[in-house]
Image (cartoon, rainbow, N blue to C red):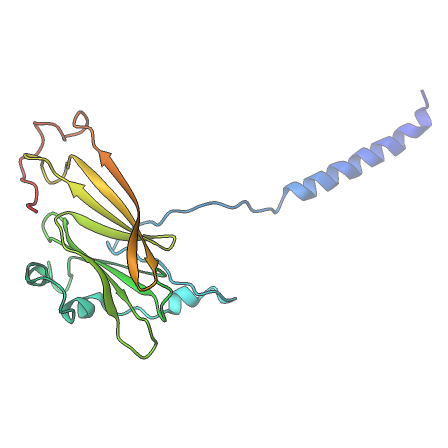
Length: 215
């Protein structure tokens, strides 16, 4: 064995170890983070136009959803009658801002709920086609237990399905519909129906006695 070459070999191995250690530190992996509902109860999706600035979503226009609803002639009387503060000036409204239609400003998704059970009674999408024009109602669904969100540029509308005798907190299932903007309107792209188990939690026949909302 050539012992004279051993120090040289050790030096090479040490250098390789330092090189590997340097490559394994300081890196960042990608991760997917789903939208989280804020403690205030109003989910907000940032609107970010293409460009180098990362603060675009924070400074984008965000109109008052209550003003949009009150000025909308398309809204039914039942929803308008329910559009009152639950406490002080806190309205039963969830709002999301995001890019659904590629308009001149963020699109606005507004969900109106009941104060007591927080059950959706109407969902609306407002679009601003031109920077000089007002927001326009481009989608609406006024049904019991309906709720809409923005997911990666798609409009996701969820409607709880109640069978006779179902308590409010435990529907029998749900329909999840995906809409996409095409031309000048939303078109349905996908549909999923989910049925819930009655064997878990309090969703069985001995569950809460609160009646389900009527359609």
